[in-house]
Length: 503
Ligand SMILES: Cc1ncc(COP(=O)(O)O)c(C=O)c1O
Picture 1 (cartoon, protein in one colour):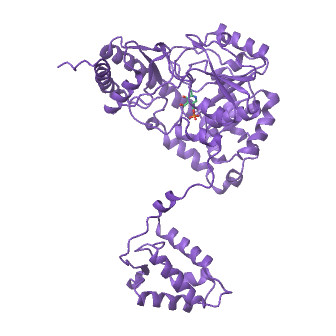
Picture 2 (picture 1 turned 135 degrees about the vertical axis):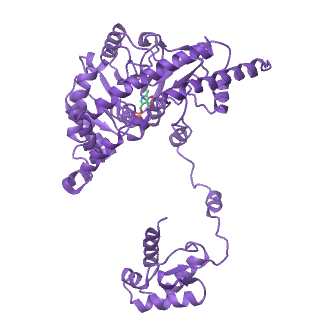
Picture 3 (picture 1 turned 180 degrees about the vertical axis):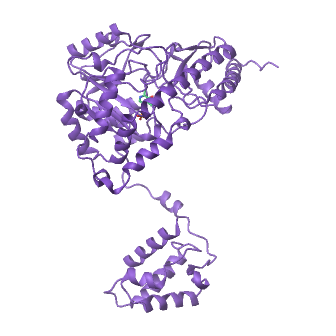
């Protein structure tokens, strides 16, 4: 901890410990508090104490009171004076207490709530986020941080102090919402005004808001099976029952899925299903909207990586096709910028906009307005689009190279998703190797493979697959990464069948 911070904390500790009502003189009290601190290692050897003048001022006592206490502590070797450079805690030689052991031994007075226990054991994103072939992570090393820094610095100043306060509208900073609305209109055929855009701190928060605003505890939400783990974990944490929807090569097949009576919402990623990569054709999109209308369902459209299409014009968003206000559109800046941005948005139907904005203010109390202002500039000055254009070329090349290297080195052991889009490939295992064994063997090679998140307890043979991300893998690392994957696959097969490794 920085010296200055420690000095300030020590002054606070002493101020709290002194009592003017006590019979003991202040000088004696000061001596006792510091002595105890040295003995129990609250004050660690080498720590600098505040000067007698500044401590006296802080405590509202005379300087002589502090000086006399310090002198006695120095005489008894609890403190040492180091010439002109100040007064320091001495090394008394005693071993510091192990406070961790003491804390760990204390039993909680009550167990976690059932919901808390379930949340704490759920899937989380706390896994490695770098290297080959981590799924879904953008390449932050290519991000123009110098331009981003300039935009942030512009707004991180005293020139507009309202940006240092709470958001005036729960939905976020209006110029950013305007920039997002016009970007989505052009790039994704989303039909909306800035009023309908609600800025959130990551897709988890967007899902959480949908769950709380559109369903009651005990209602059912359908998710694709497999899906991104964020959906089942956040929906369940908000008290919803989560049910799996059937996927086929055209994405979510709502007509083939069993819809429990209390189903209120259906979550889907139609433009590039996560993780299988299925692209929902127009006919299926229209059918999904018709079903949503007749069954009175909300459709939560996760358009998480729509910026990255490598083979011509993408299909318009579901939201853009929706005429009845059934779709809530989710987007994120994690892929187009970098994942630590934690900036995302929803587009809600016009009639719901004020309610969603009020809800954000009520349960999240939005802020970080200077970042929102910086992002608004970053978009409107064209840096955002320029970065996307550059990265689109780069990721397209990486995907192509990954496909070629896999075909060359692994033959037909993996059947790859077809979509020329996104930051990952879904790779189905065509042989008998178990996906878990491949993931384990790949880890020994220093590779990180994603595994699809299934609601059903045991995926079928048809669903044995791994997810290979290339967003965070530089072009020159792809070929050597695939070579290591080939070795991992061979070992996984050998171990599974009990065959000895050739050679
Ligand atoms: C399917 C899907 N949706 C959404 C997200 C974005 O989540 P966030 O905004 O929390 O980064 C991801 C990120 O990996 C994703 O894979």
